[in-house]
Amino acid sequence: MTEDEVLAEFRASRALLEGHFKLSSGLHTAHYLQCARVLMDAERASRLAMSLVQQIPRDVRNAIDKVISPAMGGIIIGHEMGRALGKEAMFVERPTGTFELRRGFTVTPGEKILLVEDVITTGLSSREAIKAIEAEGGKVIAVASLVDRSGGEVQFDVPFFPLVALNFPTFAEDAIPAELAAKPVEKPGSRKN
Image (cartoon, rainbow, N blue to C red; front, side):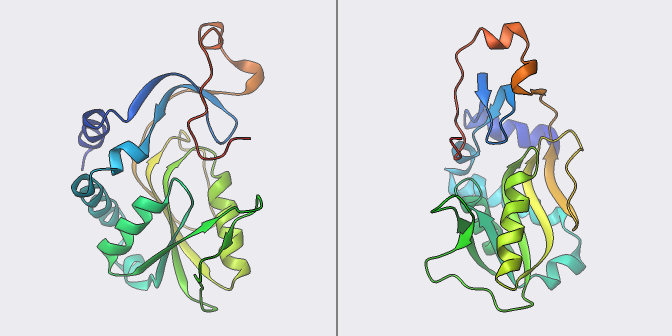
């Protein structure tokens, strides 16, 4: 899928929102991608996952043992990536503020994991999820996401494969433009701190 085709999917599902949003990263923006809306249609979610799988080189795809996503945002696309790759998909969650595997999910030491996110801005949640997976003995070999909104800034110790890179401006708490600051703040992400 091209960037325009991916954005068309977001627009068709009314998942591209405008206003004043505080992201899970703590940054502020005038644009928010509500991936849960774009993924609520199973056929659309499947198309996006298949397109994302095609961004991952064949040798990396063939090495993947399992797909793991951070809850909440990554669960649906992670599941669809598992289906597209023919691999088990599970998720890490934060019942006490730190990511962990629960619900009987396990990794065998040395298993090669693809970490899948919906949107990556700073990579903080992804790095926290990688740390939790590695603490269980898994080896994250790549990160994939529907959207990279880091402006090309996010770096991992493994290859990163986004479906599309979008560069909506983000602002630190102390650098919010007056026009944006005048709008009420919404916190649509899964992390409320």
